[in-house]
Amino acid sequence: MFALLRRYREVLVVVVLAVVPLGIFLAHARHPGDRTAMDRFVLTVTSPVEKGVDWAVTGVLSSWQRYVWLRGVEERARELSRMVNELRAENAELAQLRAENDRLGKLLAFARARPEHRAVGARIIGTRLDPKGLQLVTIDLGADDGVRRMMPVVTAGGVLGRIHTLGPRSADVLVLSDRNSSIAARVERSRARANVRGQGAPGPCRLEYALRSDDLIEGDELVTSGTDGVFPRGLPVGQVTRVKRGGHGLYQAAEVLPAVDVTRVEEVAVLLATDLPDALPAARAPVP
Amino acid sequence: MKGWMRVPLAAVAALLLVALGATATRQLTGGAVSLALAVPVVVWLALETPAIEGAIGAALVGALLDASAGGPSGLLTFLSVMVLVGVRAGAGPFDARTPLGFGLLSGVATLAMGIGAVLLLRYVTPATEAPGWNLVGRVGVEAVLTGLAAPPIRWVLDRVLVPAHRDQPGVLR
Image 1 (tube, rainbow over the protein chains, first blue to last red):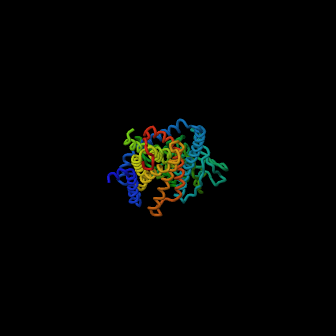
Image 2 (cartoon, rainbow over the protein chains, first blue to last red; image 1 turned 180 degrees about the horizontal axis):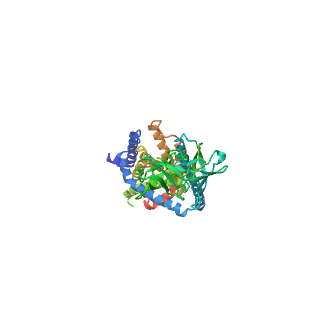
Image 3 (cartoon, rainbow over the protein chains, first blue to last red; image 1 turned 90 degrees about the vertical axis):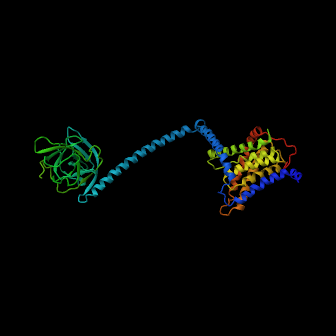
């Protein structure tokens, strides 16, 4: 018996080594996802080796491609650089368009929130904020577009100014920071009345004719009162930033930070009012 | 070299070659083609080692392939042993020890192993999950590439594993 086994041991070993795995295969073939204990053992042992080889081969190939095989890389780099520049320009343009879209959206929402006033949109095409002269911005609408003198000009943030001089296709807007601009305003919180006058330069305006007895504190929001015959009531004008009450006098003084930064405005809306005065009424103490 | 060392060393060589083949094809072709670099090791074992040693080595390499392939267990182990027997039976008519002969034999062995796997899987798995015949083209490409890569593998194996002396070359001798 042993002699027989010894004689055919090669055949037996080969048959066993072929038949056993075949049996395992046939037993597991219908559930290929189930790994046997043998598979798991082999994987546990071989995974680190495979990872090591993968790391080494990847490193060699990567080094070859990055440091040796650089054919065409210069041309590709130039092409990519050109593409990057084009995309940057396109991106900047898109960012501008998006910002403009946001601003116009706000302006539209502002106009829609006040259906009692008809408004037309305009772009600012020039600025003259010279401290020696008038504080003006020029818009691309004029008399031919139905714009008239004294019409209020606003942005989504609030009051910008009023139409000062007219051309057929353009108009100058006297902004609220001009010394000649005086807007009748009301404190949103306490309903106290006052006038907001420009100081001749972009930046804070001055609050005039606020009665000493009026309730006025820093941070108060000011809106148009509608009593000057130019600006409809309720438009944001600015915020009280510094209140000064002297030891005597009828009025208290304050600084007003305009709701609209005249140096940054690009799109505006002209409110098409019909019953406007020919000239701005002389600044006077508001009637309580 | 001691005979008992040749088998584990062959398995280690197969492991390194499997990892090398997988990484190289992934890096160079994104996995569009595959390489069966362990098959030349089985062919080498068939040609250069005694039957028992070669069969154990082939079974080890097959188990390794089974584990790394993730298919049903035992399939590639069985096919590796069958390839070993087939190479020992079929290597007689030509000189398989030349680079050309070894490459050709490795290519044919890879093709046989691939087609055998497809056949067995089609036989035992449900029709909806069975591999299609379209895989045979891919197996053919794998066989050609493996055949091309086989001569250098043989060169390394000859130096690392050192062929055993076979007194009576035969299918199972």
